[in-house]
Image (cartoon, rainbow, N blue to C red; front, side):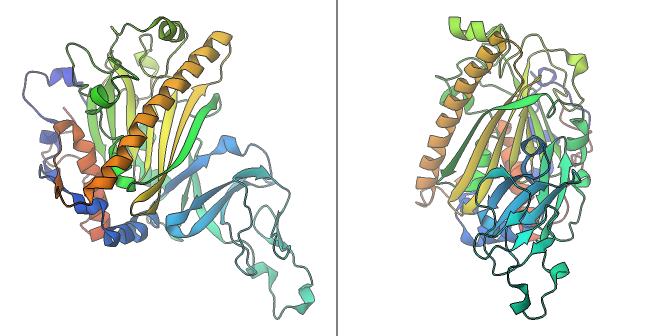
Length: 422
């Protein structure tokens, strides 16, 4: 798809919705965020069938290294492990003997996986290695009693698993243009995790995700933490620079206020880099999917990876939001911020400043989401009204309802025949 900057739209009266008329403009039903029946459909037709991001290869650099991702919605826990052959594999975290959970720690290293209950032991490739008092079992076949594997693939250092034994698409096919257009971005190799927070939020996973698919709220909710970072006199409501739908995935580019006057501390941090607004990026060196409109007013992009990963990229630093549904009104939310490895004290200071600002922003987001979930069940409002800049919220809901109610494949291009967001 070819995309153009938002400044080409100004004064024309054209809306983002005009490029994607198949989404319609009707309000969204609140019931989608409350229904147990809908939640069960999402469990079976989305989370059990699609590729899910579970971590990064940097977490397991050596043979025997592992991390564990619990997936409560699917009643399982997953082990991601690097084998002696350097291959990365995924297994259900379940013993073949009596179903005990094998690894309890979130991350670690071992030379064999041993069950705490009866000491059944497994090789790093999942094969059953040892069974105490093996002769007392009946017709025990070690070859058939290894760990249960899951489909696993890696994209740009991100590890994905699929609980469907026969996925309809490879990971590359699933990510499509969103994946290929980001090739070359420094997601791994020279980056280090700067900060990560995990919380259980009393809200539906879609409600939380929606909060990060639009920036209409930024001038209001974040007026204390990041005032004027994404607004200006000419753009008081933080209108985005670019928006495009990529199958079930999507991307939008945020405006950055180059005329921002930071506080003295923020100014000192910005001199050595920043986590949001950059004035010195090199447009020509960015992959085609990063700042696709090539606007000099660009701050960063939000990449919406269906179903529940948001990947935000700027020049050189990025952050993620990962959502794991637990119940219709409970979600595990992890926010993680990544920076290039600091090479000077000044860069380290800048990154710590970005760490603090990011923390303040996500705390503001998290509080309001629980308050919203606490009142939408009242029946006071049956629908949500959507702003033109909330197009990605509508697109996400359309993709969810299509997958859960069998409405067919996503359109690959806008149905008005245009090549992309204008």
